[in-house]
Amino acid sequence: MVQRKPFVGGNWKMNLLTADAVALARAVALTDDREARAVDIAVFPAFPYLGAVGSALGNAVQLGAQDCSGEKQGAFTGQVSAGMLRDIGCCAVLIGHSERRHGLGENDALLSRKVTRALESNLIPVLCVGETLAEREAGRANAVIDAQIRGSLAGHAETALSTLVIAYEPVWAIGTGRTATPEDAAAAHRAVRQTLSDMYSARFAEQTRVIYGGSVNAKNAADLFAREEIDGGLVGGASLVAADFAAIISAAASAS
Ligand code: PEP
Image 1 (cartoon, helix red, strand yellow):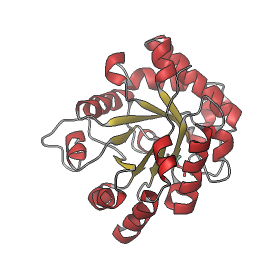
Image 2 (spheres, rainbow, N blue to C red; image 1 turned 90 degrees about the horizontal axis):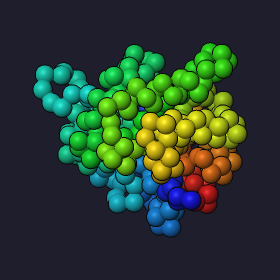
Image 3 (tube, rainbow, N blue to C red; image 1 turned 90 degrees about the vertical axis):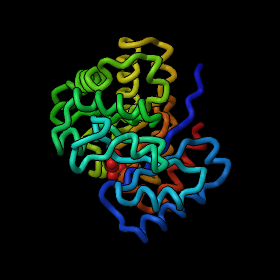
Image 4 (cartoon, rainbow, N blue to C red; image 1 turned 135 degrees about the vertical axis):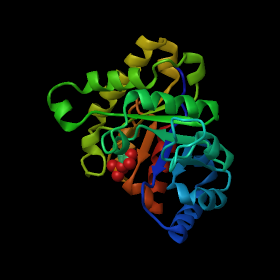
């Protein structure tokens, strides 16, 4: 069986000003060496703080951005390119977070271009997928996840996607305090891998990390990460509290 290294990301969203962002980055940088070796840890601050947070993080924790443009460069006012993110030290980028898919109407065609831009710049694409509550209640969760993955990865060859991380984030669980049960999350992760297997190969599906996001906290992380299908988490609210994020990293390290 393939060993997948856990990935734990802290999505800081549109929170924290300089002093608090740097203080939190310094606290995350203090992660125990053994845990930092066992887990890929990344934080995703807002764009203006990437430089300051990157300087405060040190080597054990990766810097990530919450989004990138689907364009390479040019007249795209307000957008930030993957090349710029790489240039200032980012290693990873979130693509298709539900607050962008659903909040800003980003579609799969655009997200596929963003994946292209991320890969061109050697950024790990953390592709977010997940169903709404209405879609789950209509029994369409797996179909929605399947369509999002197929659309967002359209045109991408398996060989180019070796760093891909998929974040399964049911929309109804993000920021709501309502977490998917480990069983439901694991079932969704199996559905993600089934799609990857159908699109590419069983081997690719087995190697690709699939992480869970949606109200992960210091208390529920261990039960989620204990499932072999779940390779870590994308954490919003709890990543803003250093002790809670540390506990989530510990849970991922213990499960590895
Ligand atoms: C997220 O922002 O990706 C997220 C999962 O948020 P929260 O942990 O607050 O639900």
